[in-house]
Length: 176
Image (spheres, rainbow, N blue to C red):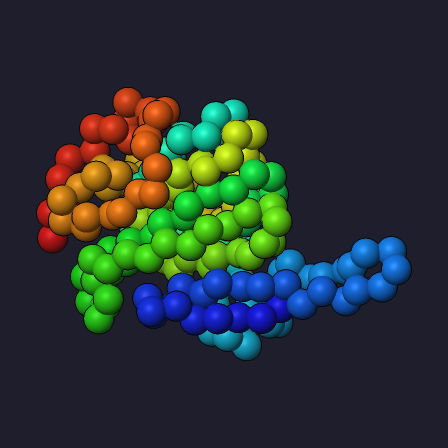
């Protein structure tokens, strides 16, 4: 795997190192030792799959509060997403900054999201699937989020949002 640190401390784009031959290729998508070598949380306790039928579906921005903050390894296994993360760690030098990346079945890139980040995505293709590996279990009492269009962040979504849950639509404005 090739680990590319982003402008947000602790967040990495991970590209596959494909071993190719006449059959196709083989690549590792997760390795505890490699994650530890890059200072990343290798503890994965839960995997989730998000299936999104229509282009323009927005999910997010989601995160869990302490004591159940979670790191995520996110990969798009079908279709494509505009993936967004926001650093919500108050003591971070990149607090309140966000970045985006296109993850797709075609580019096979992954995004490692450290604890203390909010995460969301917009599907940019029909029939999109997103696979998550999580470092902590889901805890509804700790689950929270940031509204997708919160003026504190000014996220530049590339397309019209056509489908969004009531919950995601109505998160309150971000407060420090």
